[in-house]
Every structure is written in C-alpha cells, then in structure tokens.
Length: 314
Image: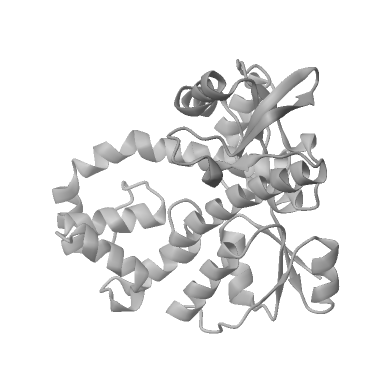
C-alpha cells in the first residue's frame, strides 16, 4: 500500500462498517483502525487525567459520563472510577468480577463492546499474534528447517520469534531470523519496532525477515527483509487476514478438519455472567489456527462481531 493511500484510509476509517468502502482485507483495515484509535487515546489521555475533579463532579450531578470524555468504553469507565477515588486494585477487580461492582451494567457493556481495551480484546490480540507465529512454525517444519523459537533462545535479552542458525535462502539472501507481526506495518510502528527489535536482531543474529501479516506501507525503510501474508500459504491466514470465525450448525468436525483446526464447544448461556466471560477468554486462548464454534448462541455472535470479527454461519 502506498503511503498516500494509507493516510487517506486511516483518516477516513471511523467504524467497522467503513470497511466495505475499500478493497483491502478486513484484517488490514481493522489493524489500521485499531492503531488509529490507540494513537488517539495516547494523544488525549493526559488531557483527561488533568480533568478528573471535573469528571467526578459531572458524575455526581448527572450520574452519567460526559460526552466530552471521548475514549473507548473501558478507558472511559476506568477514568471515571479513578476520578471517584477508586484504587487500581479496585478498578481491576471491577472488570474481573463485574457483578460485584457498583458500575456493573456499564462494566459489562464495556467488556463486550470495547474492541481495544476490554479483557476480551486483549486476549483476541494475543490470539492473532499466536496464529501468525504458528503459521511460520509450520512453514519452517514443512521445509525441514532446524530453528529455535523465542522460548528456546532465552535467557537472551533480545530474541526474535524464530532463529535459524544455518539460515534459509530467500530471494538470494540468507535469512537467519524471522519476526512475526500480526498488524499492519505503518511508518510509525515500523520505526518503533526497528529501534526496539529489528536493528538489534540484525546486529546480533545477521540478516532477517519481518512478516507484517496484515500488510505494510510500500515505502518503509528496512535493512531486514519485509513480507506480508502472501509470503506463506496457509488456511490459518483466514483468521488473521479475513478475520473469519465459523459458527457451525452442523458438520463442525468436518469443517474444522478442512480449516486445519479443532472445534470449540460453546457452553455458556447467560451473557452477563463470569461463566460466559471466561468461556470467551477460553475460546481465544485456544486459538492456534482458525476458529470453529459449535453450539453457539446469538450473544456469542454479537460479542465476536463487536470485536471486529466476521462471523460465518455454516
């Protein structure tokens, strides 16, 4: 993607429904929107923290959050709690056990709607990263390439996701390490990770590769080789690139086999319950490839959609 087009898309994206206006994969557009929202929070947060007394006074008078507090749902509630004198421990407990919070209704709503900072959103982001790494692992194993992963390289302080001592030939270069990034590589993010990781990997391990699974800006400057999802063929890419979750009414096992994954049996019923929340967490914690859910219900489908996923009923 050319930088001019990236900045135009980033400027225009405001919500998931805007994705239909562009030909890029859903995962690419989601990543751009996600980073835009995060950047907005970083830019505004210190302004709002300086207005905590005003926020508390508004709440005491109107019993609602003011419209000027323009933050994602979870951040809005956490800032409100902070303005009312709650400790970090108390705030954390409110989100782990919403029913015990005096803000129960607001907390439950935020948990199931905030695709950036809710506990579910965080687990989902971890799942995306894990799937990207699993695709690379399977690719290297299919080539009979010996490698060490991040865990095997510790206690080294700076470790890429995969280190290949003998290297592999890619486009005439001897690649000795691969870093997986389940995001879109824009200029700001690439510059950040280059300084924090890539430049040090190049110095410590030699030539390497970064895979930005959701695409990148064409003009990025990099000594490391840069690739996107097209570099490796895998059915698991549907979860990353297309953001599809399959909700099976029948033949779940057969579908899962075709997608190189396993079936997750949904059990929880009551949406506003710790059981339901824990099951959503377990769903994302179990992800190693695509997601196929059996015995799903409408509430689960709504939550998945709120996280930006495309639910496919089969």
